[in-house]
Picture 1 (cartoon, rainbow, N blue to C red):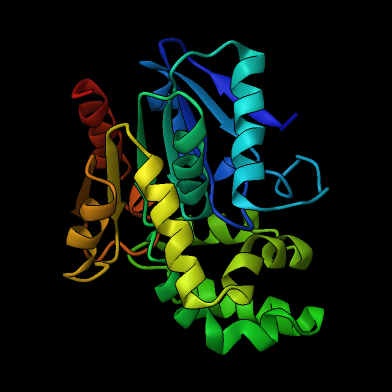
Picture 2: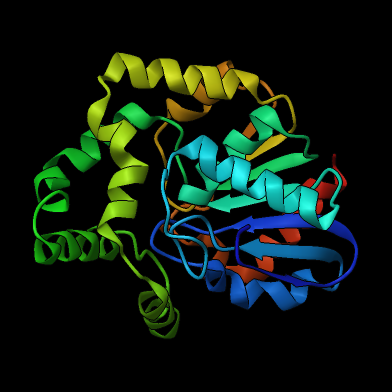
Length: 249
């Protein structure tokens, strides 16, 4: 069972955090969301206070959340995920009932992500010192418009574990582009619920047509300039967007 925080009353909403982080990433949003939602924010497998036991693949993490949802007796939650969490909630929607998905700044174009990770692969698989330097460099490039206090808070929360990161990204490192494309197509085509892909960094002009071809229920929205954490750069706007998306379901 995953470690989690639960607060509020209303329709259920799951908040899934990004890689190396924990449910505390969502802290600035939880109290306001809890005024209208039953908010459940878990620590994903290998993160926070949840088990460190592998495997750390997408569908195992999605199944972990499904187990938690069942344990808490939640019905048709709204699934919201940032970064790794965006992939996990997307995977969740392929197998388990939910009323919609909000994916925050996580492109499903995994073959493009493979290209971005390629220069860091050696360091990520190297010594602990090399791994930590690579993770630090990677996240520093994704700060975007986060103010100093928010960036310090996120940096303090981050707990990079090499075995977890490599376990999560093993499919990226080990699969040829053609296989990654097949995986993405399989996952995306299995999502039938409304899907909001919200980006703080523009994924490019080809992304929206590509995603909506694979996932016809998807809408792509760009808050350009916010960077990797648009939900923390503009929390009030994000909460309102969650509510408006949910109201449209």
